[in-house]
Structures are given as C-alpha cells and as structure tokens.
Length: 275
Image (cartoon, rainbow, N blue to C red; front, top):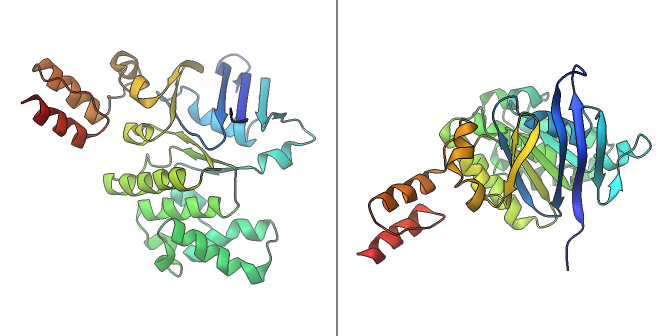
C-alpha cells in the first residue's frame, strides 16, 4: 500500500524582489518516514525552500500540503506546528544558561506540564547522546555537541517533519560525523519521522532515501543517492564532489577492476573477489 505524502509541494514560486524567482515553479512529494536530502550550489534556493515549508516566508504562488491538506491562512499555525527547523549555526539557537534550559525552551512555549518536563528533557537528551551534559553551559560545548542539543530541542516538540538547514556545514569533520550518526539513527529508529536535510555534505546525502538537486531556483534532478550522487557532471556544475566511495569506484574501474558498491568495505571485498 502506497504511503500518503507527508509533504507535497506544487508549482511553488517565491521571489524576494518580485523580479528574480529564488524558488521557480518547484514540485515534489516527500512520503511519511522518508529521509530526503536537498543539495545545490550557494544561492540555489535550498534554505529559502526550507523557510517556505516552515512558514518563515510566504510563497508568491503554488501550494504546500501536509498530509494532503493544503496550508492556508486559517490552518497555517496548526499545520506548520508539525515541523521543526534546525539552523546552520548552533550558536544562534541557544538562549538558556544550561543545555537543560535550551532543550526545555520549546516545551515552555507550549505550556507543557512542568511535572512531566524533566522526564522529557532527559529522554531527548539521551536520544542525541547529550544526557551527561545537561548542566553544562552551551558555550563550553563543541560545535557538534551544540548541534545535537539543537536537534534535541527540536525533537522534544514531537515534530512530524524535521528540517535540517545546513546543520553540519559549520562543524569540523568530527562534529559532522557525530551529527551524521545521530541523523542516521533517528531515520532508522523513528519510522514516523520525516527528515529533510538541506546540505552540502555529500556523505550525509548518501544516508538519505532520495536526493533533490536545486539549481537557480529550479528542481533539476531527483532520485536515489546511488543514482544522483554518481552523476559527476551534475555534481561538478554545483561545485560538489562525488562521494569518496564513488570516486574510488571510478578509479578502480579505470584500472580494470570491476567494482560497484555503496561503502568502502564493499569495494575492498570487490577488489579481493577480482583477484
């Protein structure tokens, strides 16, 4: 049985100046529980699209549906409460004196019962591996730790759609890898959570079910990571590299070694099998 679309975008258009369309007649669907990555060059419209979905910007034309219900002025608050957005710079998301305060902030805004709040805070801190840091000051955390706290603060509101807007772009390689693991685990364990990642991180995009490619406000390509992220010509036009494993695969083929795999370990097996 086909899943109902959690999010559907139809002919969406947006311009900041009413001259140049930053989002230009885009249409796509995201199914419930899917992990979708959106990639593209700087200025392609990725972050603008995220802001349109969560209601931080008003579209010029087109339609946005959640669970087959179109967003209108009457239902906007109710429907867009299904979403949570994690921004690029974790420092811009902290307002509390401790990690615990920051995770709790969203609950306080919705008048969540105080007697149940501590249990929820601890639960979601554990989900992102930050339970032992609850009493720490956010300023003393690494970039990856801060971003995990920001994700916990979003998850505690029980969103149906989690949108990550370049959530790993300001992190060092260790921080990127840590947050990537958290995102992958959430996707594997929370089957009802739909994840949309706006990203330049090709290794992050490899974890997703589908990749959408934006260029100059248009959706130019979409498909599974194993197809889209092997398209060297398209990626080069976006100033992005193919994932390391696909570049290695290509290099091996140039040496006459047949290999086609999604991980380095699988490639190693192919090399041994070819001997």
